[in-house]
Amino acid sequence: MKRPLKVIVVGSGVAGMAFAHRLSTLMKKGDVEIHMLSKAPPETSNSHAAQGGVAAVIDPADSWEQHRDDTLAVGAGRCDPEVVERVVREGPACIRELLAIGARFDTDAQGHLDAAHEGGHRTPRVVHHSDHTGAELVRVLQGQVKGTAHITVTETLFALDLLVTDGPDGRRCNGVRTIDIRTGAIREHFSDAVVLATGGAGQVYRHTTNPIGATGSGVAMAVRAGVPLRDMAFVQFHPTALYDPQRKGAFLISEAVRGAGAVLLRPDGTRLMEGLHPMADLAPRNVVARAIHTVMREQRVPHVRLDATRIGAVRFAREFPMIMKHCMGTGLDPTKEPIPVMPAAHYLCGGIRTDAQGRTLLNGLYALGECAGSGLHGADRLASNSLLEALVIPRYAASSVMTSERNAPIPEDVEVGRSSFADEDPAVIAALGELRDLMMDRVGIVRDDAGLQVASSSIARIQQFVVDQWAGGGHSMDLYELRDLVLVAQAICEQAIAEPFSAGAHWNRDRQTRASTGNGGPDTSGSSRSIMHHEALK
Ligand code: SIN
Image (cartoon, rainbow, N blue to C red; front, side, top):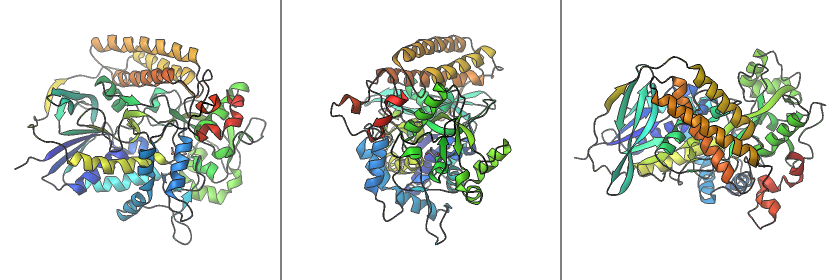
């Protein structure tokens, strides 16, 4: 009799849970064991924080072809068209399946699904649960996962490294090494397939909308195992994080607020996006973020303003209750006065290179969601395509994992050491701070060749610091995270240096866009639609 297939999923956000749920419906108990390992519960994930929603074609006047074209346009010629087509075509089916398992999405007075409008979309297309759609998806998927006997969930394991063996068929991933954040026990867990769904890496930047756990562990583990990445230069900055004078956080003000009619204002009260792009406040995010960055730099102001008063108090409170509550908690009433906003690092468009089934270039290893570079997003991500990706690609990954070979016997999980966590180390905290400032200043919204070179040398120095600290033993939690973040920073910086053109979220003022070279490159509408503001935004 065949032993059960053993699959490890690292991460507990929407992509990981969607995968586990799908596989558990394809294979019955006794045929598969799915072990979900994460360092924290799903409520702390980037998915849970997602406000906007799931981009999907639900209006008969809309079409998957238009969704595809908007995705390709914002991706500025760098998307994989096959992946784009596959993902956007499945949007409606995903929404139907979510409804079938109990997801609650907003509806209009006739009971039809309500679609919000966000940047880069030519039409309202974002299915949502008021302004906390991610939390709703986590709720509904968590219910499925926790109610399934052949899925186990452990939420105290920080993944350290992939286990890789050399076999007759080449290198293969056969498990992960973790550290238990309560006890310090270091364990090796073996499996037939490993699925990385570790989320984003926004914590590599000083200002980010991401939660504290977004430290790029999956990407870093892939780098250490020699697994190729792609599109790492493309880090999306969300145009509107609430400005916090204490600089303690960057609470997201959803783009759906602009979709409902809010507009960005310069310090003198004039419209910021008017005349800069045909889609104005709903231009692709890289365009809007760069426009705000330019105003902030030129006018030496720490923020611009978002005027949502035109939405009306009743509608604002109904559609954006969480944003309302947060703003009011900081003494700002968005229904009465324009609120201060600034761009903040939001989404890693690239990641661990995968195909449309989530397969990486290492046998046995899959990557899903934000840690993956599937080619869907290209040089910039169309708003709310990330939750869609996190729901669609896991379906294909589950079908692929199902057919995994299970020839070799799998060793039992084993404890291989124990580490007591060292206290906070001021030198490590200072290095983390330096890395985040460096990334913000030199590898942020607008880059240049000299700045990228400075960043590259500084990152190499911080990398050496990490190596020295690591050799010294007694690792603090900050050191574990810095070890990952510095590799993510290095990958972003190296790929930014290697990019010959500016495109989408990678804007190097020393490099032209492919469109502006006139060399017959692809229609980079994220850029070409914005051609009129290129000079203004450099
Ligand atoms: C937002 O609500 O503005 C964020 C949604 C997304 O990142 O796609």
